[in-house]
View 1 (cartoon, rainbow, N blue to C red):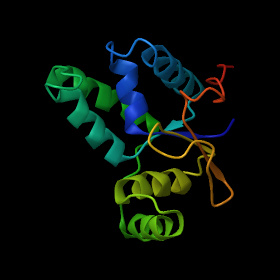
View 2: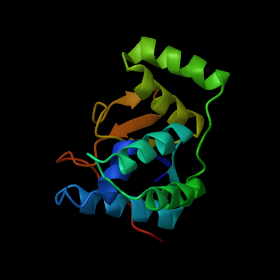
View 3: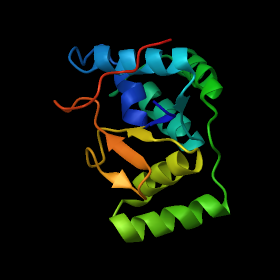
View 4: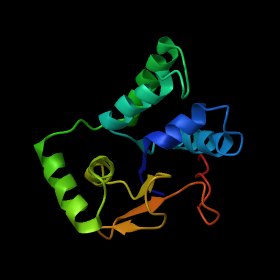
Length: 149
């Protein structure tokens, strides 16, 4: 399995003990991708995760815990936005009908040469530009997390 981009919701589920069905699977994906060093994210994902993690009605983590998570995720090579990423996201939004924020996620995954994008928010099994497959890891036919070698 190649590189896998992880959307914010998967990272949040891995930390959300209120989701007893989704948390173990999200956690398994995160651990497997960390062990194989094949997980990728963007700074957008870090920003969104921090917002969700510290929101009192969402994960309600202490700021220090959310900051520690964001620091640990820097090992996943977060991609910062630039003008080329914006151009790519605009093209993807026009071609596939993605929302602006989702188009930025997909553009970042493509820029990092990922073959999978894990997201609950995008169309499961959609193949983008013949090289990136979107997977909802909670879908019944989703592949399991990769085994660490």
